[in-house]
Image (cartoon, rainbow, N blue to C red; front, top):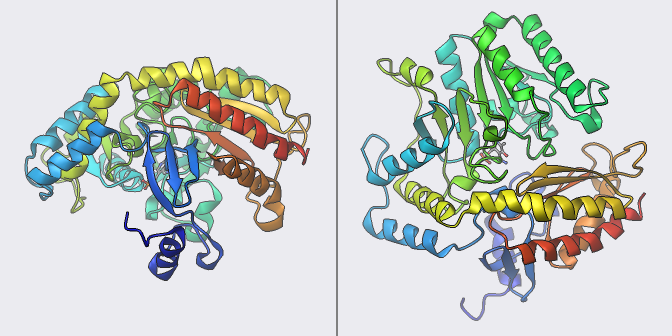
Length: 447
Ligand code: PMP
């Protein structure tokens, strides 16, 4: 760091030329970050933050893991780039390591630069494989910000970009706390959600539906762990109607839920899995689609009409190889599972008992959501759906309280998600829960 660099100079440079995602450019004041290590990052004034958001739920092994940093360095020195059409050692190795961890016969890997491109390509594959056009996805979902992915997305980020065409039909998934089906048990919610999906397919015309795209555990939309039997039921509907089942594991994959892929929890094998984020812990951008043997066969003699200049980029693939190997050697996936069972789950449930603002705790592994409410009885959300400005003040105050205490939270609508790095130490995780405990007293004032 050169001596004249300060938060003020970094912020001024940022304001001059950087155009930020999802933001009114004049109304934001991004934190200037000077460095990061493990589960922490810090600003230029020496303020350190415990990252309970894992950036955008992607630094699954925390920041600056030495083995991964070294692998990036080595690959950069050896071979930075090659076009997708060549056979490259690290690309094949990354594909092998991923294929070995995906369920069933999803053994071919198409690489992209991130999650949205993975979803775009999964949809293209499904449409070409089936010869059908429609794609069904859940209202409570996020699938990315490119053309097809934003149309599939259910949450309000879709609204400004929605072309209201693109052959996308939305349906309600299971979410017992705010059941679209007025169900009162998980079993009832599961049964009714599957009946609703079956009706949606029947009324859209099964012969026109190419794919059902679902987040295995919807992430940004609220970490709604599906009831037992739901994903198996969707699999069954897809099989019955020749529909391609796409699981979007961009957020839930690579250890986040305490398994390599969340679908393992319910023993379900889709036809395509979209991944990104945790595959490199975000150190170098990478995503992709894991493809079943049957769909891969469609493109055995017929060309696959899609590609990207940086598909299977060597630096990204070397990063994936190092990340997966480090996770394996250090038992990160098992650690995340234990963390959920022994620390985060019990700790968050204890917070829910103490705080009138915590309406529900949901999650598994290192993937949890607290739903904040004005009233536990009525379940009225702490802020209205998609609130902005003054309407969102209670959540803004809660967020500010977290940050002031040194905890960097993930906040979306009336929820805070507890999504630290999957390898966070137990002591650090408990420290984060204690800070959250304090910040929740601010939310409690609005109950
Ligand atoms: N799918 C899911 C489930 C996601 O959570 C995200 C990103 N938050 C995406 C797709 C899009 O990924 P990207 O931002 O890398 O394009």
